[in-house]
Image 1 (tube, rainbow, N blue to C red):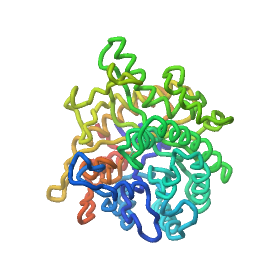
Image 2: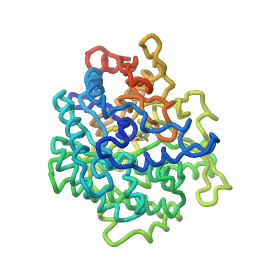
Image 3: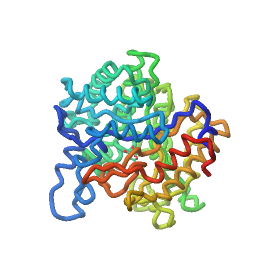
Length: 453
Ligand code: BGC
């Protein structure tokens, strides 16, 4: 397999997000985000009570805020031409209202440095770090989020006019599910009521903000990213097949179908009728968005079975560690065909919208030994997943790019710093950067003509 097999115009990139890499949580006028607050509020001595494993805190991550030039140089050295990162909303509008010029200046510098290095910036507006001041007003459960987000997007698009590629949201199903239903991510809210409201507002935001950006400049390339997972039943028993269908609806359909104009899949899951009380006239049309690209983020396969004890959904996930030894440091199954099945599932909707894989990668417990990180398993992961992308492309699916997650090790949300996703190793004490063997592999893959099978 050669990188050229994917076509001359294929976008090759690596991705990060602000909250996971920047540190500098309060530097130069930045406001507090819900993730700053979530990390701060870890009280107690009992491990089971920690919100984030080992009580890790996002403020001691990779210091991208200081080392961004080194990181962009490393990205370039691997042969990538595209860089996906996010903007911390609370650096731009600390309380959600007034502009912080120092925050604007920081991202203008990052963007300019990308351009000087001939790297195309791909910017995600929202990668989960809402200003805490807006969460106090209800955050994603308050419909006013549309206005707050409109102001933020307007400020960003006008000040960062050199950016051509924009993404509105990063994986709404994950930040709404984990943050407003299970309460395991910031802001730690729970229950169906919060979930349905936050979900509906997130879905509305995609359509609303897409239109705002296009109004400012119709030539901008605007998408949004979605988390997709290949879902299967544990076996062929009808009740387990039904459970897998429900899981698939929740994981893959619920946050995607309204955007492509199919509305909420209420017919297939009656509890979704509860969303109706949050839907206003015109909402269905507003959610329907002819995005310029669908950001596909996918990592693994999940399996489900029937569970009579689960009152509403009747499903139970069968954890990967109970069924395979092919596991990542997140205990996610390594199953390369999953990416092909996900691409095919999206392709089957026949939306006519191109796909860009905006995240795919593997967490390992990498260590530096004599200046080298031997992450052979990561090289295998990328090779095998890219072969599946190539397979999908050869069947005619419209896939325009691939971004590895992640450029560097970072703060893995509730999992803290132990699972490492980077092509670049970060020593979180000294902030030293070491290109892993997988980074060297990408360099050969992207910069030479030799096959990298
Ligand atoms: C998120 C990233 C995260 C990655 C691995 C995606 O859900 O966008 O922020 O680090 O998956 O868990």
